[in-house]
Image (cartoon, rainbow, N blue to C red; front, side):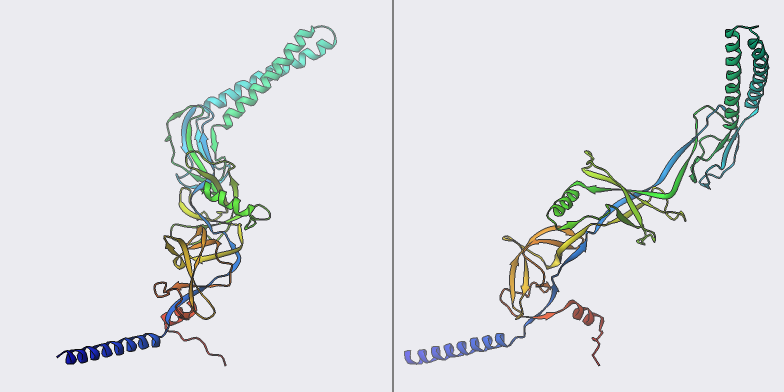
Length: 373
């Protein structure tokens, strides 16, 4: 009985050993797992500075009455584009015409008196005081006439700048006083675009520049490009003409402004847009996609593929995020190959089958690479 039992046990052990050997041989015969790689390069790269922004007319001017009077006519359509000097309102003129006539009569009288006094003073027939009084009356009459003509001209209210008019604040027939706000004119060419730069981002750029890893524009001028709400890029570039020298204590950001030509009035004031500020260059920057990075309890790392297509983990220290990428501070120098897709399959020490992003894209689109003649 025992002899029979031992024979059965020996057979089972032999079968189990054979199964393990077959499994090991099958594992050894499995082809390498395919992974997509990313070629790491160290090269000069523009700093992609993009911010939320809002447009504003370069000059918003209040149009105010400068004399008291009744509005007789409004000579523009609300919201209409007007040119500098174009007549917007006409105020009642009669009282100011009368003041001009009165001042002209006073000037005529003072001029005749001054003309009479001069030869008499030369003959010592009148005193120095009489002469000075006549001269002062003549000068005062001239100033009064000039002021009366200015007030008469103020009855015609013109556009101080070219731009789009706002809604009228007083309709025809209303009495307005000196300094009453009649409407506004918003100059839209050029158009200003206001945005804010986060304080930590500005400090980070200053630090990178001090380390020699970032280069500011040689002339100190940043160009700007505008993305509208519909996603389209505005076809004319602008210039960043103001960056504040202090951080706003309420927002923790630095105010900035760009100016864009707007001759066709395509951009309207008050629009929310996105602005791209170009000019800073990252020097010999190593930038990798975010999806190539693994985060573990020991820190961040990437899977490097060596020349034999064997995978090895590499710890990296990351800097700022740039869009969907990371700026690498330490761990990669350029020239390495890292796993981009297939990180789960890429075990440490495993041999993988490398697929370039170009080959993967061709496989997805069903296109075959062109063959050399």
